[in-house]
View 1 (cartoon, rainbow, N blue to C red):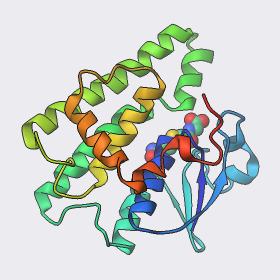
View 2 (view 1 turned 60 degrees about the vertical axis):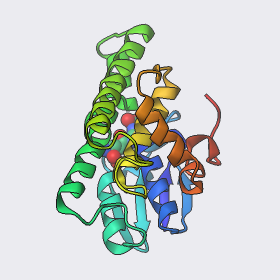
View 3 (view 1 turned 120 degrees about the vertical axis):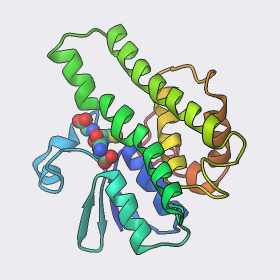
Length: 214
Ligand SMILES: N[C@@H](CCC(=O)N[C@@H](CS)C(=O)NCC(=O)O)C(=O)O
């Protein structure tokens, strides 16, 4: 497989974790979002949205991280990242979308750039925006875990699912943008359990060959 990726991308991080969990090997192609590689014609021809990740499984092109994870789950079902039980599957997907569909889309570079260049929001305003949306997603995750699973190792069951993958990609941008994680004790317990697993740890942004510091 070939993954078009960037070290800091939370969406690419989700895909790296899932590939690692399923022991699928990949070749990385680095698209530097800070230098605008996503807008180069050769990449836009692959991904008209000009975003990472894009994954190739042989000649088949896949895009949108959650769609990629669902594809991997269907094609490579072991180990599973979705529960068997119908209601549990809906809960796991709902939990994951707090990150992938609600918080994360509000803080991606093109939104931050629009805030800065079109709406003229200054650095402090942009940081407040990011911290607000990450914090409200973390708060919802914390409350859902308190209600459904106050003590388990992972969000659901004994092994990581899509929910844990998206919990992790809610926490890492919060760390990057200095959002306090103190109020989210249950979220952080699960984050630490995930990060103790090589599949998560090796996928972390700081472990990527294109990591440049921040
Ligand atoms: N919903 C998409 C989001 C993809 C996305 O926005 N990726 C970001 C990095 S995490 C990106 O490439 N942004 C480029 C930009 O905003 O210019 C997914 O989950 O794959």
